[in-house]
Image (cartoon, rainbow, N blue to C red):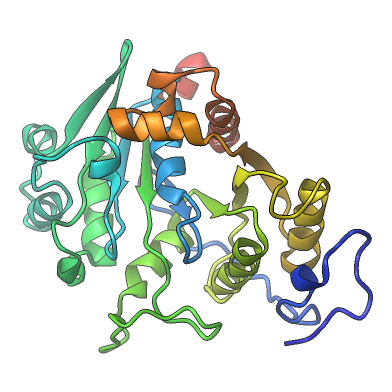
Length: 315
């Protein structure tokens, strides 16, 4: 580790002593994209709230009239079904992957294996994840890409909730990690992050979360792809860093990771807890909640530049 000799104005020491500010990052070209518009939601270890962001970004895009599929692609700890209050769910991801590989994934099968969530006049499709984390080898990059190929013309956006990295040189390690012929738990993660049209990187707003975010950015920089993520600071509050928390986080992420914060999602525990209790996205619970307003703004940033049925119809 290298300590910054000169701290930026207002930065706390514990935020400055992270990573090596002298490390040169090599810019590489973007990998070939997926056949449909994929929005990857990812974050470091420590539950920064990526699942909450994934559910609500997908909901906001659906409310814009887009055809959206939300996939629980967290092969380590799938949780979206419970977040949405769903107990009895179809096979979802595993069955769709198997059918796609066998060239048998029809529209009827797709609808049977996903759940339609009504959002007023619009709807959000949800594909449940693995029933057991031990089945992660079933979700290969090749199978996932074949699934997306079969969904061309059926959906406009695929929002995926991704797992944390399990093995990385900067201390990110999980006991379930294994490597066999270059295929390990991070193979899918690396592929999706490299090929996604947009990556939303989710961080918490305290010193520990900031340090973990910087490590996660190193993971992105190690990929053989040029990734320019949207950075969302979740559960933002000033109690952990003081009155200048926003400035300190912005300066830290910009100086040490080259990242600009795209949105601060306020701490909104009461409304988020009510949403969890009722199994609803924030847009169906309280549209004026501070967290919902911020996530709606993030969804607008995500949709900028994307090609979809709705945007083409406007031309």
